[in-house]
Length: 101
Image (cartoon, one colour):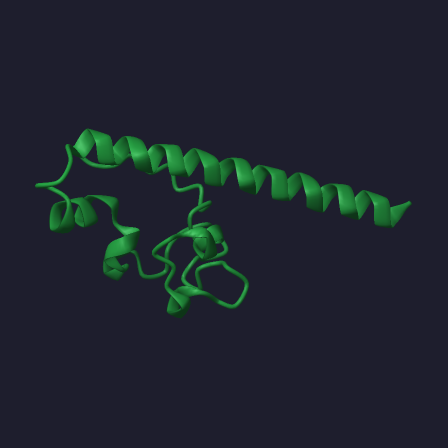
């Protein structure tokens, strides 16, 4: 069993919102400096533990909670980040339209 990431990049575009925020990953605007233009991780095989749901669980949580519960928490966080990203995109489009008028 492994975490089924859809590679939307929402977590990588919102690292500043994480309680485990790592300023060394931030390119200066809350986006991970390793997120590529094609929405992939440039250091995927060497990514930090916090970016690897399965490895994080294995290393820190196996004796604290069931894997399914940890996955559920991650899927819920993912959906919240996707929602924020969609809202941000709508706001950008709205500002562009207002500026064009």
